[in-house]
Image (cartoon, rainbow, N blue to C red; front, side, top):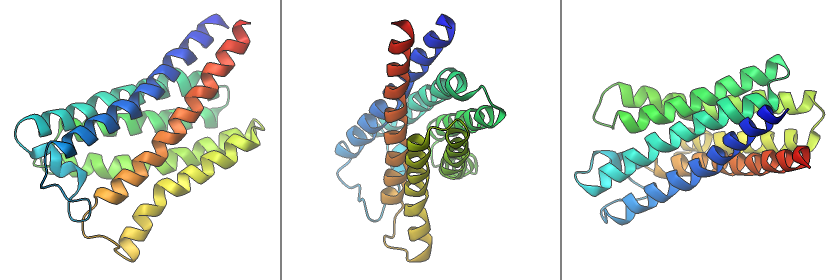
Length: 202
């Protein structure tokens, strides 16, 4: 039991660090590159800018991807892995982390690796959340099931709207909104893991 609690705490810590690091580095990169446009650029355009901008952006994605992977492997797997659907959900979210690492490791000018990792990240995130929704439903955590389902929809919706009504010419806004949705979910579940760990230690 103590080992499981320690793994959940380790995963929860990674789940908190990942979004903080990712969005801090993204915003620093944007601030350091005034020509960036939210409506006409993709976030990945920052990764091929020479100097501080590209270094900070790519490091942020790679490092946060590493933390997402740890969150899935240590946190989600120990928290949801009692059932096979939970193991699949944790594995799918671990793949999200690997995809994010790939985006940072292979900048936009590395073709086709960057494109493939980017597509994998934004496709796998809502899919993994839908699987995890099923897990929460099975273990009768109705509130978490509903929340996770809503987050999955929120992660997919910016892309659905982008490809249907094309509300912006660049991809930065749908990228940011989709990633933000997944980050909010990771932070909320990390808090829940910490809380569960404190209760089991009491």
